[in-house]
Length: 190
Image (tube, rainbow, N blue to C red):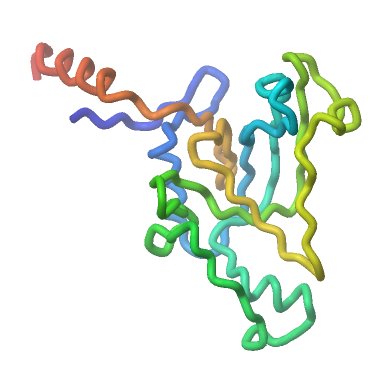
């Protein structure tokens, strides 16, 4: 099978597949600051609005940060006193920020946002949250001081900035595309 090396585009960005992004994130040592851009699931509340609203999230924050330490700091307590609930839907891939859904194998990134926000479009036109508020699913309510972390689906990430390098993230090739590349490579002289 042919493997591709990330290559810079004309605008200076480096293009990566989602699997290459997971490998890059898996190689980061310690808490690392980065920026991610992703589209979320369909935020529409009603069936009639499904597919009309797109939510684009752009955040800067950290991966490989320890949740218990961040929570202890936000509460002003010792890290040993932090109780965390076990999470049953996912398992971590080694010592990486990549999480895998136990039921269906979908991969996510554990990400602690520090700044950023979301933008919305309605029928492909930019709009504000207020424009679509009545069409959105209700927000969940939590209690107490929260250490918020996001888990965007790996395949929903479209851009990342890591260590000053800008990455454009694209879909992994299909098996048909891989086989086509392999057959083309087989016909080339070495």
